Image (cartoon, rainbow, N blue to C red; front, side):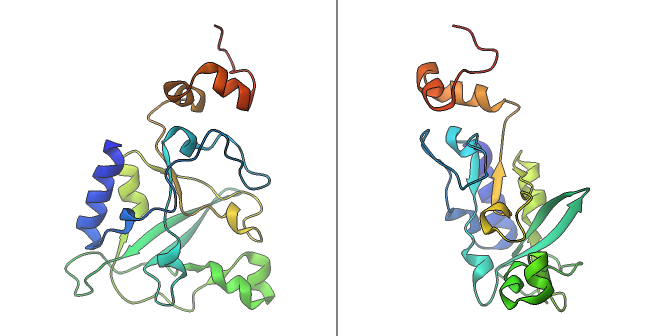
Length: 192
């Protein structure tokens, strides 16, 4: 995918390390079964979605920070990647306090809220991956309504590039009509 390869190169250039070089996933088979309550029409089925590696967020010294953005009743995440060099030559300091999803493990209000704000803005220099991804056509996905207590619904790591296609059009680019209909039923508006 040219847009993903260009984005990967840009992230490497801007951060000084190849965060997008090791994805969690970038393709799923047509027979993929998602977590309970999630849609089967995942863009990774037609090669237009990626799941970022969560490891750099989960480490003791996080290389990824998340800014929670509530737009109406929907929660999105702005993903910031820590610059490989911390001398100020690349990246910028964070301007908002990140959200700590792992605080939910401590119980109390953080467990009910799906995490908590960090005690302070972490020092250092970061690059806004969400903005870079958008520059190359990659959109973040919103969290699903259960995100506060069901980790797979957080989806901060999920990005898709639809290229202006509907999901069905994307699938028809890769699969035979019969294979799609065998898995998903009749294709809306499609007649043979």
